[in-house]
Image (tube, rainbow, N blue to C red; front, top):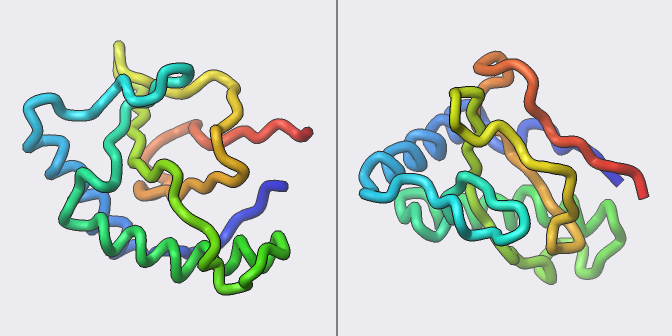
Length: 134
């Protein structure tokens, strides 16, 4: 079941997280990682490797997203405290030549997944997440 949680983070919060991610990537000799996922590799960086926002991102999702997911799916307890992060990371897609512009259709390795768009939707064309009905 696909659904949208509107305005999980404010524009200011998204900007703060996006700037922290970019700063971390630019400060790393290796930049983004590209080999963490064997079957469907993404150009990404684990949240835990961005200390400037890691704790805030985790707490925010636990407080703002997990309770809504638990309630919607009827998973006790309703506060979402039984949910946890299996893999929490930031992905970069780009239309630039040679860059990763998407992923092939696949199934994530968890029972539930979520995406939070950090850029303004007006910053790019296309994109999005396709979910195939079971």
